[in-house]
Length: 450
Length: 160
Ligand code: FES
Ligand SMILES: [Fe+2]
Image 1 (cartoon, chains in turn purple, brown):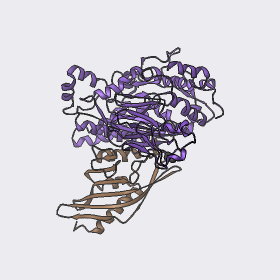
Image 2 (cartoon, helix red, strand yellow):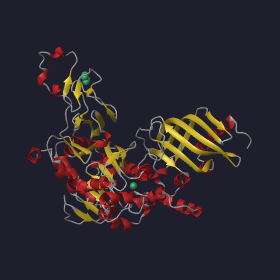
Image 3 (tube, rainbow over the protein chains, first blue to last red):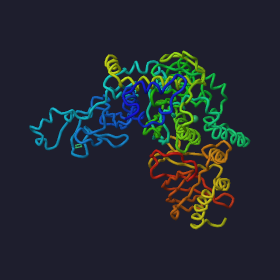
Image 4 (cartoon, rainbow over the protein chains, first blue to last red):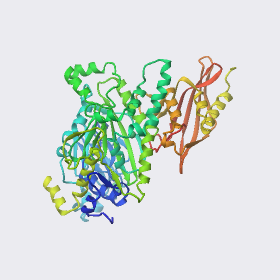
C-alpha cells in the first residue's frame, strides 16, 4: 500500500458531494483498503438461515476477501466463523452449502471443531504436551468474526470486533426486507433455486450504483426491452395474452417521467431504494389464488398495504440489493478493483402459489443471468466505463443529478426518482466506513460505539 | 418425408450447428417448432425448467427477441459482433419412434464464443427432442447442459 494507506485525508479528498475521483473504481490500493476497512466495519450479508436449517448445516462465502462460513450449532444458534483451520490455514469447508455432521473435521491433520467453532480434539495430542500450545490462539478453534446478527433469517456479520451495531447500521431500511418476508402468507421465506453467477470485469461499486440509476434503462436497455416490445407487438396479432416474460421486459422502457415520479428514498449509512410511490414491478398480472391467501393471513387492509408497497431496488450498503416484489437478492462480491462476482438468489414465499416462484425464477434468468440480454446491455456499459476511466483527460465521475447544494447527509429523505442522491449517499457512507478505523480517533470512536 | 433414419437425425444436428456458426439465425429459427423451447439448466440433472433455476428457458417469442436484438442498431454489446464455433462429437441417437413421432439425440460438444479480443470455450451436452412436421424434422426441445453450469460466466450472447 502506497498512495492512500492510513491516510484518511487522501481518502476523503476522493469524494466530493457531486463527483468522485476515478481512483475509487480503478486503484488497487483503494481496493485493498476497502477490503481492510470498509468490508470490516460494515455489516455484510452472509446468507439465509433457510440454507442451514439443521444442526451441522453450513454455508460458505466471502466477506470482502475473507473466507467465512456460517454454521448451525447443535443448540440452533448460527455462528459466523473464519473458514480457516487454526493449525496450518486449510479451509475447513469447501462446498457452498452442506452438512458437516456433529463437528467440523479439518481434512489435513484431522483437528476437529464443534459447530460453534470451539476446538474439539487434536489427534495424537501428547505431541503437544509441554509445548505451550494451550497458551496460543490455535487452541481457541475456528475464529469467530467480530459480530454476527440474524434478522428474520437474514444472516449478517461484521468482521471488526467493535463498531456500529446492527440496528444502528440498518435502522429503518430493514423495512424492505420486512416487506419481502411479509409477502409470504406465512411470513416466511425459503431460499430456493441455484444462484445465478455472473462475472463482471468492473469495479463492484459500478454495479451497486446501477441499482438506483433510473436514467439508464430506457437508453441502455432499448436493445433488449425495446426489441421485446416490438417483437411482441408483431406477434400479438396471432392472439393470446401478454406473456409473463413481456411483462418483465417491457417496463424497462418506461419514460423518464415514470422513473422520476417513482421516487427514491435514502437512509443513513448508505442504504436507499428506488420506487417509493410505484415501480416497474407494480403492474404485473395477478397470480391466481395469491391475494386470497394474503387476505386470509393478514386481513384485506393489511394484505393490500403489503402488496401495495412496490419498492424497486433496495440497496443495503455496501454490497447487496433486494427486490421485495420479485423476491430476489443480489450480492456484488468484490474480487479485484476491476472484477466483481455477482450472485443472484431467489426466494420462495412460503404458502404462496408456485406460479409466483416461477415468476421469481423467470425474472432472475431474464435479467440477472450471464445469458440475460438485459445483463448483456448493462455489463457492456460497466466494462466500457472501467476501460474509459483510465483516460487521463478527465479524472472525475459525475454524480450530480438533482443535487442541491447543502444537501443533508446521513438522513432519511425522499427525492425525485431520477436523482443520483443514493449514489451520493453511498459515497458519504463509503468515506465514513473507509476511514473510521484508519486513525487513533476513529478507532476510539469505534470502541466508544461498542 | 419417408422414414426418419439415424443419418437424418445426425445430419440435422450438424446442420443446426453449422447455421449457428454461420450466423444464419432466421434459418436456424426455422428449425424449431412453434411450441419449441431452448433450455439451459443451471442445476445438475435438472428435471424442472419452471420451478428450478435455469440459465435459459426460452420459447419462440424469446428466441426471436434474442435474434432480432443481435442485429439492433443500439445493441452495444454487439459492437463489435460475437462469433461462434461448434465442435460436435457424432450425435448419438437415443430414440426413433415413428408411431409417436418422437426422435431424440444426445451430442457432446465444445463451443467457442468470441468477441473482440475475448475468446471463451464452453463444454457440455446437447439433447435434441425432435418431431416431423409437414415432412421436415423440427426441434421441440433443445436442452444444453454445460459441464460447469454453476460457474460464474461472463456474457454468453449467442447459442450453443
Ligand atoms: S491444517 Fe487443519 S488440521 Fe492441520
Ligand atoms: Fe440495467
